[in-house]
Image (cartoon, rainbow, N blue to C red; front, side, top):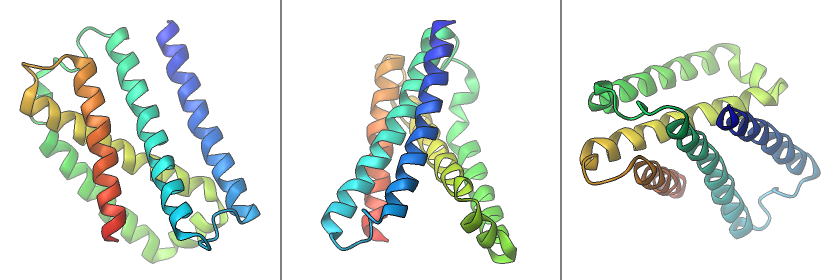
Length: 161
């Protein structure tokens, strides 16, 4: 039960993080005048979000002995790739047909979308690390390495964009 409470606290922390980030946007602290500070802030934000998801997964391993044991984890990279692709297509479709106004009016939706896609990438990282080295790593190590992999991939994607 305590790990469920910890997970709920982390989720509340993610909501608080979105609120604080939004307030910093309103104040204008991330206006892009200092591009280096902006990049560092964005990478820190990504690292915090991925760390929160990793904590949730870690505590899930404490709650459930069967987490990361089910045979579906063998097929998870393909499943998550399909879900990610379909989610991106739906997002593009919605943004093209009026979703942009909705997201700009209700900024919480933007953070929800960001968290959703980071969550999918984190699950993809877990699945890939699991598939490549499940016999030699513990569950904790799988989650740690997938978190590092996710932050690294998102940093590379950000620098490419």
